[in-house]
Amino acid sequence: MLAIQIKPEEEVLAKIFGKKVFIFECIGCKEVYFPREDVEKFIKELKEEITGKAVLDYLCNREFAREYLRAYSSQIKRAETVLVFSCGVGVQVISSLSEDKAVLTACDTLYLNGFQGLRVQDFNCNQCGECYLNYTGGICPITNCSKGLLNGPCGGAKDGKCEINSEADCAWILIYKRLKKLGKLDILKKILPARDYHKIIS
Image (tube, rainbow, N blue to C red; front, side):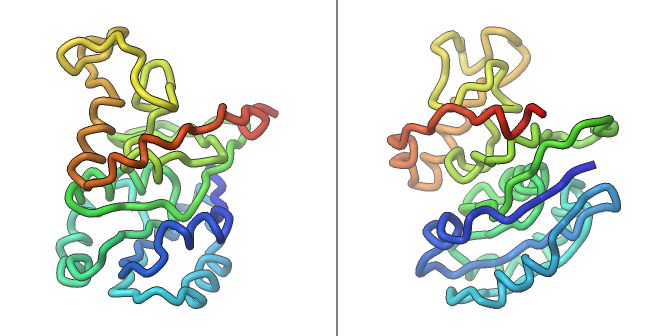
């Protein structure tokens, strides 16, 4: 089971201020608590131009999401930013399918105790309670970096591969390439604070 909450309003608004926005809203499978009323209220109060909105479930399904991207391609093309209301998996899927577009999350996924189910997606979410995807180009440094580093690579990568798992790409090299393609390398100048483990340990 997952539980999702909207990020602090000022944090989201600062990221999309003055931009044309396309919105993905994943109402989630039955195992996800999704605050739909709060999300709808938030969207309704946005002053930014919304080029379109897609409401769906199972945004974590890559092929399903790809079809929605095709169906809404003209509206997404007019947007400068894609804003996603979902767990971290949905955001990563949309980001991986929209390499030339800034994809932002409006949500944090909360940690819950108990069995989390079987993961069949290409992406994972550690339920940090403070999603970092807006700083890392939609590539999660927690689940994709073997060391879970927040502020750059460890220095052990070789030929773009992780020193711990030579079959895996270095997450921070992928993050760098993604941000460079988007013209947003300046984001890397911001030092992220240490993780608040109180949000994921109960």
